[in-house]
Length: 353
Image (cartoon, rainbow, N blue to C red; front, side, top):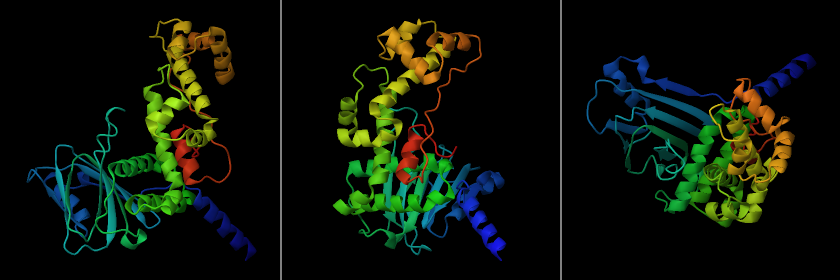
């Protein structure tokens, strides 16, 4: 009997450490071309009416993946951008859920990553209609999970913040373990509550996902301005809209914000040095990233990568070193929280390895 109990405990622990997998995965290509849109409509027929803005179509390409996060269903629909979908309220939906959706969640550049995201929040029992094309992310959760009115008023900045969080969460689903799911679900509900019915207490409860979104925004800004001489903690505080103390606290897992910027710049010089198509001198490559003292740069580079800039250039030009950038160090041990999970992944310190 003791052996059986021990085996059960081991199996449960192993199960908890497994990667989170899709609960449902659908693909219209499995049906005949003329029937594909009808198949897609049937996937949602009990909760929403779906139509084509352009009318009938000879074929319809779409996939849908759904992950279960506690009481939350997280759906990602990729439909052909050639078809404009119209989603409408169903008079008697099978469930009473909040639906939070992000349309046009793909972005071709950092510059349009904000303007292309459109957030929608509604309740399945309330009359509503919206349109989408391409990718649609939708989060479903029971109505009584969040105490808010059926038609909440949301500030544009709060809506954008929630859209950024859902995009970030989607990008991190592949890093989640089953043991993380409860924390992720709880933090996501806190985030929704903070946006739908804001209060000081709810904002405090949503601290982890808020920090994760701030981190992502800061990293986007760093990547865009990596060669900018004025890139500094002070600059980031102004551009991202965050206090200095909070910025420092968020980037603490990476050794601090200044250290993170320095390492990103070193990684960029390493990539350039290993690229045989880059004929700039080592000094020019370093200076382009703000390293004006060649001796100091060389010491920092060797301490970081174990090779000198000259050695990296020689190996790269001989085809023995790929110019792709290195990952940051792995995150520290201990039990991960949603905060450390999402921020760690954003900083290149994935906990899944």
